[in-house]
Length: 433
Image (cartoon, rainbow, N blue to C red; front, side, top):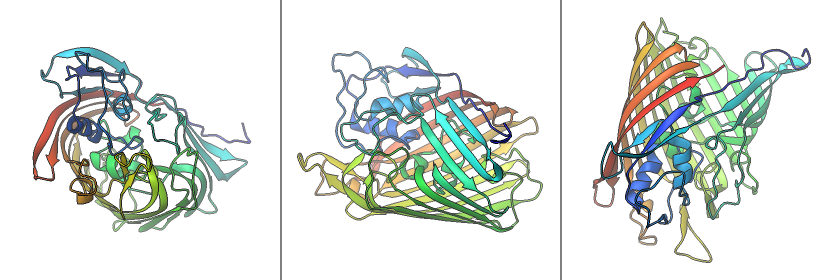
């Protein structure tokens, strides 16, 4: 259609994936649920457990996705694709097998009337894509979310782009990189705990040969929110490119599939101030019982050269008085996940498009969340992930096969001692067209 222009894109991602659920105790303790929740990218789910899950005590084992307490069912439903979780008493003793469509998405891009006026829409149809959940305390975002992105851009010149609508905030680079362009089966635990994710509002992007500026003025409640207040979110990002731009969009694709012939580096930082936020992570998480203002500061470094790729990031979130209490039942709490996280990953792409990658990530809450006399039952754990991944790219990131192994460890920060840990194996295939 000449009015809408050419370039509409249709994409289906990660069509068929499998999951093995191993034998599990009838009652899942808080520590193991925290670990399961933390090691997966739970950006759209509740980030902080506030009560003990209630499961069927008569069951001999638990099948994820069948019993759905406040957070467990949705976390497993979204991110247990192609995943083997060793949290039972007998490793490699599967009681059930499941296969899931993890992501099924449609993307549309093009222009309207004039090439300077472009659009980007993305719809998600899998259960995980829609963040389909039903926690007891959720007024901000309670319906299945089919719409992921719906934004219109005006490009007055090649350097400036202005946007209005719903899309990703200019936060940490790993979150902005599409899920279809990742080296591992999912993003790191640092992203899961501290990312900004999507929001609705105004966006700006200005590019020079050695500096990129990004900014956003948004609602602060995340995508498809049903309720907001007088607080807004203000986000700004600066990217320095000392050796010039990467090839194409190689600075926002994991791995070095472009095989940069000259060293390329990006040094970046993001700051976000979310005034009177209503959710545990600002744009994400379950509802708070009272609004809180939170600040996020992020630094990241990316370098690529002849198949080598190195990426590292640090994120910190702060908030005054992060714990909120149910006015009807003060024993129930909902807290902002304040703390910090560090992640670093490195990879090498061989000439046959086989890639090996390693990643280390650690996230730790502030002391208010694990050693607070006003909330003695709140005991958030620190978590560290050690991960090794392999990928075979058949047609770049659009057609690839990936596998990996990860060890996750929880630390009791009150005693600074080992609390729990388990191994995970992953396998997935992605198809995009």
